[in-house]
Image 1 (tube, rainbow, N blue to C red):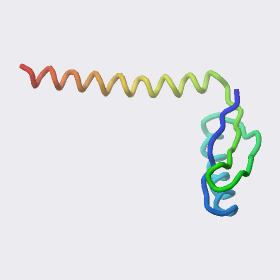
Image 2 (image 1 turned 180 degrees about the horizontal axis):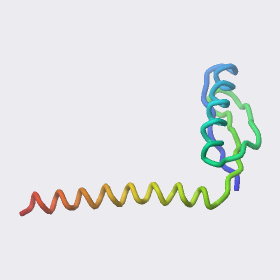
Image 3 (image 1 turned 135 degrees about the vertical axis):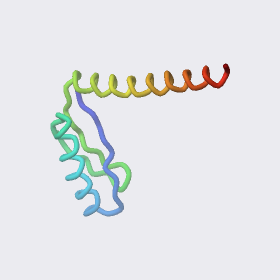
Image 4 (image 1 turned 90 degrees about the vertical axis):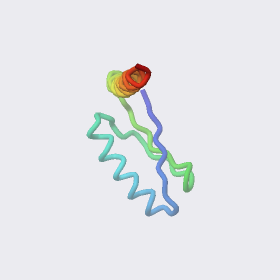
Length: 82
């Protein structure tokens, strides 16, 4: 599966610097860099190939964080009600 990530920067040098940072960051997560499309300051995109299992784990982690937040919030509101 391909995932597009926006590479921001005013000029080409900044975008290339940000691209290197993104490559390093996402390679640690298991993404593989595919291509870079330079379309200007906020439209430049880095395309990464990623396994669906990695995306599923990332979504699962975010859902656990949200669930724990709402659980703590509901416990707090319940205690305030009593």
